[in-house]
Length: 176
Image (tube, rainbow, N blue to C red; front, side, top):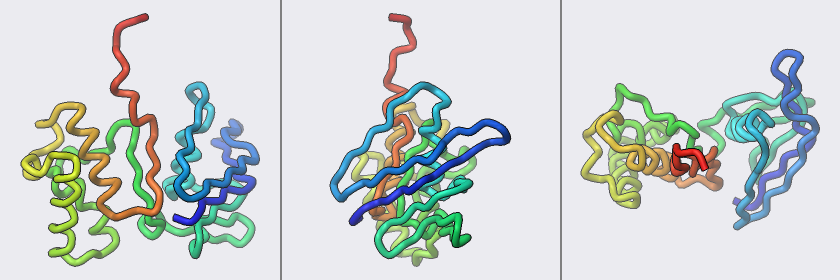
């Protein structure tokens, strides 16, 4: 990715304004971390970048792709953004095998079946889960589910990977 540019993005849910005039420029090779209390809009901004939510105003662009422009009325669907997304709760479909969960982004891009197979097994090998391809998510541990989510995020060779609280499941459930 060359860069990601977010300009004057705002989003409200009813009367509640979640994001107000957010502007960020992410340069190549950067790692950007958003910190803030629960409910401050971190996940909403990631979902807007990914195309899973539409901003009310503003513009998000990457080189050669305008993801969203409220004034021009343009919106690029998620499958055309070349982004990977690791969801807070893994986002795995319980009725699908691990192979099918990882293959889903490639299927949305209409990748040929032989290419899907090759790339899914390469991604699963990368996270050391290739032997688990025929299993369903309920058959895996939490850490394995997280790695499946990472494999799904990288299988499409994205230019940008969005991680929504990727370490939240590593926090101890005990009080300090």
